Amino acid sequence: MVPSTYTGQVLSSGAPPDWALVDIAVPGPSCRLPGITMAGFRQRTPAPVDIAMVAHPSVTLLVDLSGTEGILYDVHGRCERGSVVAGLVPGDLRASGWGAGDCLQIRLEPVVAGAVFGASWELSGAVVPFAEVWGRDAGRVEDELRRAASWDARFAIAVDLLGRRLAARPPVDPEVAHAWRRMGAGRGRVRVERLADEVGWSRGRLWSRFRSQLGITPKRAARLVRFDHAARLLVAGHAAAGVAAASGYADQSHLHREVRAFTGLTPAAVAAAPWLAIDDVAWPDSSPARRPGAGGGGFPGLL
Image (cartoon, rainbow, N blue to C red; front, side, top):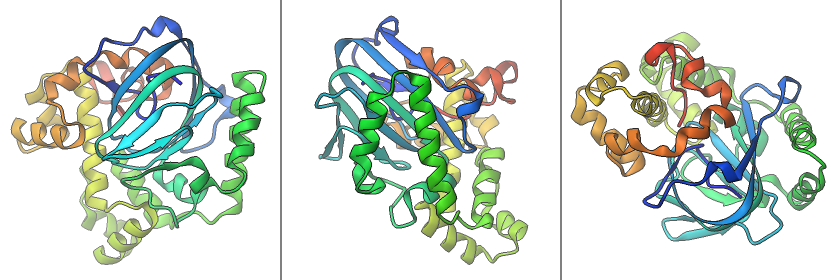
């Protein structure tokens, strides 16, 4: 397990991790599914882990392949160890322990996670054991991934398992999927009333169906997406005042409140965090340099 789980960004008061001791693998084009991204991490030398994790607009599956006790995840005093699923906006989430071995991190768009894990699981504000949301064969899945001879083999196994789940379960309403993806394209600045008009629903119906299927209200989802965009602009080196204006906040104080609400940190602390040094390697499709809108043309899509 390596100190890069959950968001790809680690915020901690300790010294930066030594990324030279971490091997990072990403799947090739043949091992990808729409709305799902994956990365594999191998910590070659055991090292202590103490991480404050940051909210991200995806549901995250962390599969512990270390064969040890794994990392301990603590959310407001509730602790989980080993493979876990982290929902949207889990709050004050920390990971601690002695990191060593392998971890497969899978990020799922909420509209995809609803089909993979089922609508019965609350996608927001929770960190739960993998077996609780995957079912009885969760242990077998972990063992199969652990035995695989390479990361390419692990990615292929994961794509097969996730693809079968997606094919076997009903997707979220297309209207809900449209609303979520429009929020992402609009960087959280699209009004719910406009989205309702686009899909031909009332505002109340869209609010209700969105909340029941994604586990988060449209308003909070938009806030999360907007925060995510602003945080990447900060990390890219843009001044807070400019980020506030570019991200649709009323002023710099508004940005400050939102960043603190999602991270417990100031915008300056987020901008100075050293942990994104490996983000363009682990999540290349989400690198600011590859997406329209951030300095030099990048759209910061995720922390």
